[in-house]
Image (tube, rainbow, N blue to C red; front, top):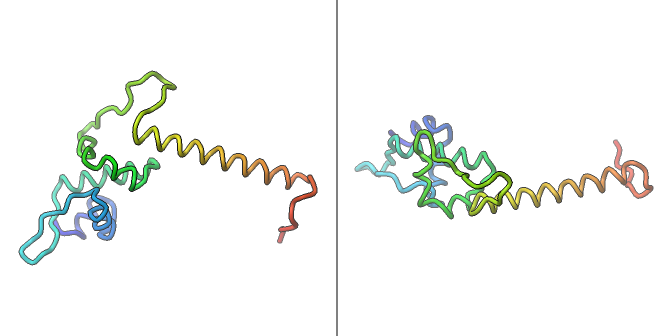
Length: 130
């Protein structure tokens, strides 16, 4: 199928398909004699996996680090990711992303607490009301 149809089937846009290809997440598709991209069920499945992983908070750079293994997640059902004891550190890209998210949550919580403390009247909150 052509890029527009493939994008609709994968729930994305033609621009996203080209972007994933440029970033190495999607192998270059077969081209017609006129140079148009042709996509099959395998590419559609891979794009769905990419979109699912991005929706979970992984980044394009995270996925680039494991692009050669994304096909493993195209199985139905996908393989289990964990296997370690509950609460044990998660290794690899997922563990790194979890650590980054935890750090960002801590930063935002501290920022919120500081703003709330100032808004509660410690006298140092700037008058920003409208």
